[in-house]
Image (cartoon, rainbow, N blue to C red; front, top):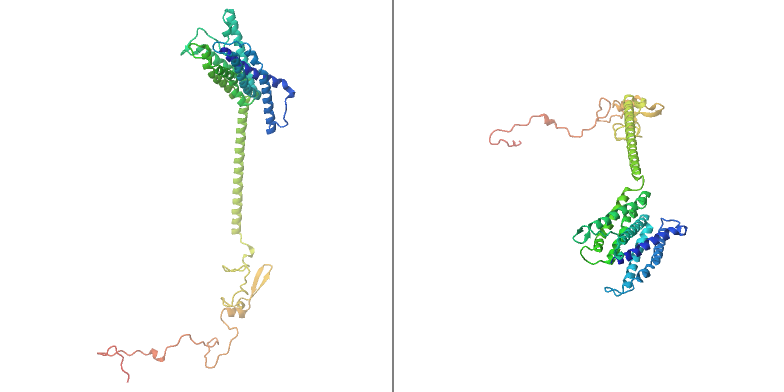
Length: 413
């Protein structure tokens, strides 16, 4: 089972590292869109990454015969081990193809895969050297991603505690250290955050494909159980680093916050000064209007006495000397004539018109008619509007008689 996990991981990691090398070696040969932010430019970039990953996968197919030929001899538990080995290699290449596209997108992912591969190969070399020095079996000496601690504490006979801690701590450290340069450069935060799971994910998928059997104190089973937790540890390390941000980001954030606060204070002070100035201007205008109104009341106009008084409701162009109706207070000729002078409108009237207005003389006295007495002023008497009482009206009325006939009228004789 250990060899099958190595086959799957070797195929996947070879595909990813091959795609990274091809992309770096392309250099000026890589297509450069005129407008990388446009949809066409983004499509061109993605197509280039897919092509490079496919080329790396094709190159990784060389692993299939390399692992299938040594395992051509049948085994008691597997009649066609070469077919199994080749299938694990192809599965690893497919997984590596998907991870390679992500590695070409984010440099932090590529760094994590390379650092993880370097650690696994170094650990395997040290394990094999230790077995060779002890004259042990080298076929099972190197285990993928962990160290086979012989005298160790086991949890429920399934998890080797020192080996589990080694996998988790190394995944955490590689996830943080591989993401640190990209985070300080200011690369994409998402790529930096997810970069920590790339290397441990290849190991976890390799153990998942191998599916070790159940047994007590089995090193392969322990690595199989702990590998998902190593993925989470690597992800935690990269997320912590991505939260720190690029170099000088905190200083820039503090400076931007300070500048924003100063701009806000300056804007508030400007608004306050403008508001104070507006209030002062409004008060000045109100005082000026009040003073003007007070001056108008204290100093009447010079031509106010020459203006003609106009009754309420009368039009501004009416002239009392000519525009009064015939049934008004007096005929228009009673008020004389008017003329417009530079100082205003003036009026003139003669004595006859004033006398007519005062009802002292007649305009045209008419002779008294015959039989009609005249008044002291020479006017003819006018018949009263109601009849006068008869000559008997002044005599006292007869008193009614006494006796039975009281209240009855006395018969005429």
